[in-house]
Image 1 (cartoon, helix red, strand yellow):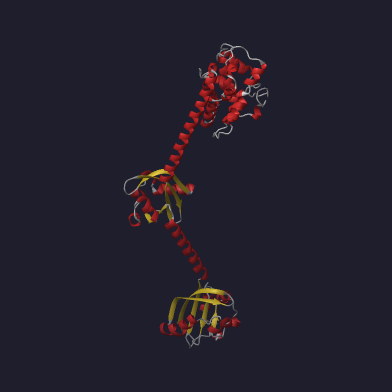
Image 2 (cartoon, rainbow, N blue to C red):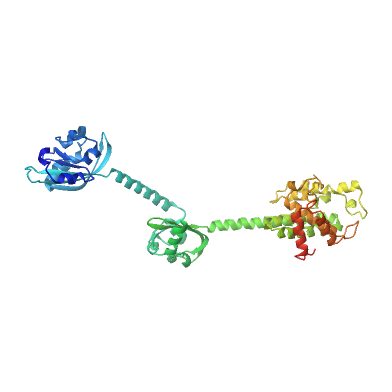
Length: 449
């Protein structure tokens, strides 16, 4: 039979077809197959030609569905199209095939032939299942998400999908959203031009509108975060209601401000207590605090650091409550022993405050405010690298204010003498950057106590 069809001009054509093709006679015996048939089903011509189709490849083609097609349907219809058959072949495994068959008559051949074209759709079906499963997962995630999710088509920005959270958040049902634009459901006009959105997404990949406001169906403004993501078919718009989060943040902020205010008031109360023990230096700590803040500001420190320096300066002499009042208020010059006792106030102040959990290193600033760059200070004889910048600012402010003020044992030395002191000992006792900032405060900013 093979000899009889060698002359068929269609043979060359069938060889160019990508799908496997098998030609059967009326007895369902294979008379010809193209090379793609042999390659796809892993059989040889010797295992194929002259065999009943059901016996091909160790009876791998003994498929009930195929029998029905060839022996019943084809006899009635003379053809069938895209008939799907699923089968597990022992040699090549699971296959899903689309079968197309025609009864044909060729010139010079008495019997009619059956042309069977086989399309292997196993891989495409697998991919379709993966896509379908992926879409099912996405749909499940979308519908159970706490964020409102809207899908926008790219031509005009019309909404094609809205999840359940949109109704809970904005009050619009899915039906009310479909076909509408974002501006129709409460979004601000200036952020919803679809072409501008697409240009931004093309450039940046994602759009964020943090802490913005939209109106719900009832006309009430709600605080939301919005972000948009580009997809091949649509733009995904996620809306997150942050009203509760903002309220929580505001409560935390208010609690922080109340706590900080109470802390500051406590510090000022402690400052007043210390100054009552030493009336000759009443106001000294407040004036040091004011000058220290001015120096820190001139140096460009952060607001928080400036505030911490001011608070530490306001109680930097708290340790003097541990010193007898007759020593503090004595109008005569102190003996070396008495002065040594005075010098303990820095350590005493540290001991008083060290266990209080300030958000700043207040106790450390206090114990270091009499340290000097060259290690000649007290109580530990620390050098520059071992002390905080805040402590070095406090040290300069303390010296300048003390020299400018009257003491029980001497009159005021004046601001010029105070500035000469820090200038002459710049980079020896006092931090040069702090000294320069202090000089600018007085000479360029016309600072006055």
